[in-house]
Image 1 (cartoon, rainbow, N blue to C red):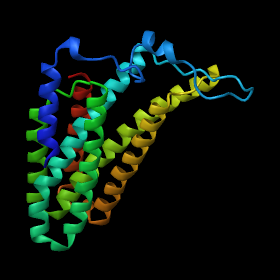
Image 2 (cartoon, one colour):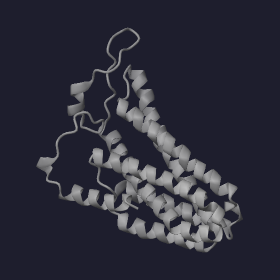
Image 3 (spheres, rainbow, N blue to C red):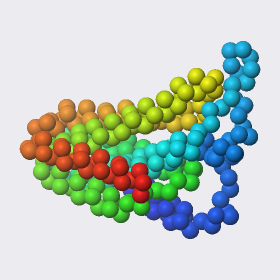
Image 4 (cartoon, one colour):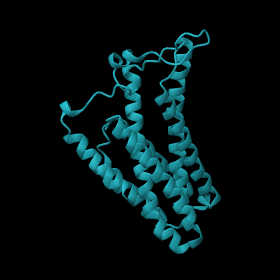
Length: 244
């Protein structure tokens, strides 16, 4: 898994990098308003006049900072869960090898995307990485040890929470888009692209949920306690990673 060592190097480089070497990201929607005010010209409105860019507030920029940090942490956990589950699951159920690989490959792609976004926007990764690494690996191994159904129940639980979390993030950004329209302004193209990325990844996560249900996740025993505990753990990890 090349992406995990890459994250470690990214975190180390971020912590070591002197402030004077960090150049301002002039075309970055996360940049301060004082910088963004230099580039308000955007697309043309219906009357032929330039449409100004929607300027994010400090709170909105902090929301995006938190969102990208949490999403990166979540995708790290997902790749580790599948890495720990796959050997046990495919040993007992060889026909699931293509499905497990497909889901892992998609999660690895998601992680690559968020690694790039976190590095590009100079966002601090979660300091909880060592703990999430251990927890995700244990969760994957232990649910696979309980059997195929429990492994799929784990996927169902995780993807239910992750899908809901992506929905919350998209709902927030869409509210900014609506506010921009009321003001006669427009979201930054990069922010629009990020919204599209969130939507695509959300859809792929929910696809995993469907695969889990189709492969008897609800037959896991004990189903309700297992799913409830995993979902609670996901919500807790999200809240912590938003801040730490």
